[in-house]
Image (cartoon, rainbow, N blue to C red; front, side):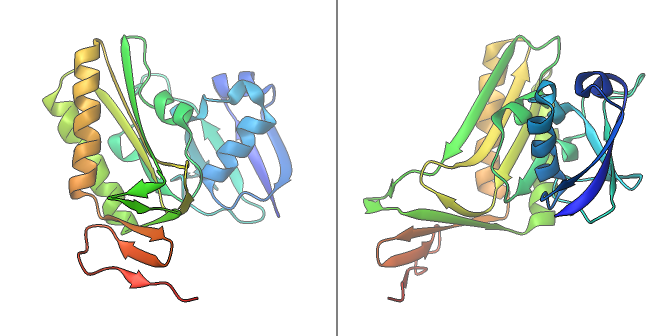
Length: 232
């Protein structure tokens, strides 16, 4: 457990009902703290995807670690600034469970009449084999940067589209969400097209690897001789 101080500003302060609080938490990173804050203040639930976090007066990423005594600021969009976070802030990779609402919040805006969501879920079979669990690993920094490049590409190619994607790594069980992609646009055709292209390009280009665990066997997907017998 660590003790953190959380500062709230503007609309977020109104939703939370306070401007500052100090409490103990077992959250190890910014993403986990965001989930804790949504549970602590129900009016924030589903709203924190549109904010930025700063730790000790420095803007932080979702997977940045927290330490005892940290001061965390919850910062809503500023007046005069863009209502859309940069692409690098709309993609994320981490071990925490994914939030569909949080990813959708990153692309919602008043001009969006359509919002398409793709959720990749761990299934219990693959190519005729039973699957007990998956484990994803990534070259984190490069993977996150490449996901942002893909978002920028598609938003330039399909005017009016806004995109976000969060991918989970680490061990996952059958039924867990592995990736959430969201696409918004004024009309549904563009949202569907951009969302499909987003997940396809992530699977083709982003350095994220998947190990399947089946009864008696463990294999890296896409690596022909990657199967390894499991030790008893």
